[in-house]
Figure 1 (cartoon, rainbow, N blue to C red):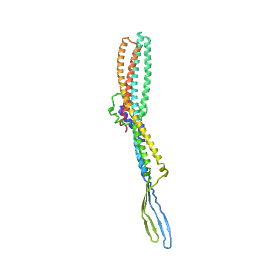
Figure 2 (figure 1 turned 45 degrees about the horizontal axis):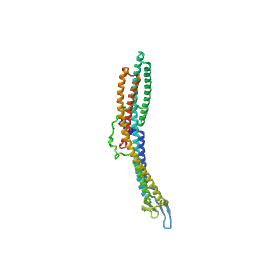
Figure 3 (figure 1 turned 30 degrees about the horizontal axis):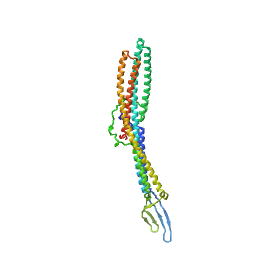
Length: 400
């Protein structure tokens, strides 16, 4: 499975990403419902019939008043405006938080993918080393029977095979664990067979020149900036308390009817509507208005301080990730050179061993050095990939 395919599958099937998406949608829907509750008027629907009998010397009638009444009331108009604005600002925060969760999760997917690639490579190398050790033991056993080598050489070869078998079993278990980890991040059965590319290239997958301070969007700093905007709205709301005291209300009455028994006629009571504009002040809230403003200002100052801290941290994170990426590339270059030297040394030792100029132990040490160098090379390639993704995610668009 290619790396790009794994990212695509993770975006569609990873449980953490799905939870982040549904959580965001739920929060957006909740704020939308809240906005509707804020602005929709409270309506009273009444259908009633009032029967009244009246009598007198000159008048005796029957009265029936079925009527419909709708009451619309809107208090604290400016409060509603501010609450709506705050809900919309929270929507932006929810979107950024979901994006951050997706980005964090994809970074875990990257780690799991390349850990599996590294485990596969180690398992391949261990398997090869085990076969070489078994072949070496067979050769040393023949030489020992012919009296060409001492028993120490035979025992060393036998011990080398046992160590290789033990290392192979360990790498196989690690491979199973890394496969389970990747399946878990992809939302798949843990036992499902999955094979990734064992060779890890170090060539950039993305244009790393785009990672500049101007284009970097640190999600933590962006989230904090939105929180500052919310705090600023809260302060404006506290300062505008007197405006929020304004209220509107209206009543609508439908036609009513009266039937006079003497005249035997229906009399219509015409519909009517009332609109009221009023100002209602909570005296306690009015007196505590300076304290509320001070509290909101303190909240804004705190959020502003946090934003300044996050901006500095963002600069530090960018510089640190750039350094880690360059350092990983440098370590990979050194590891590649070391592997080249180790292979040259092994070729020299193998030739000397065939001429009985070196002992078996030296040959085994040279082989182990090559194996370690190959593992180091793939390990540093893994670190390059990790550092590359961690750096590019600052400008990449990995959310859905």
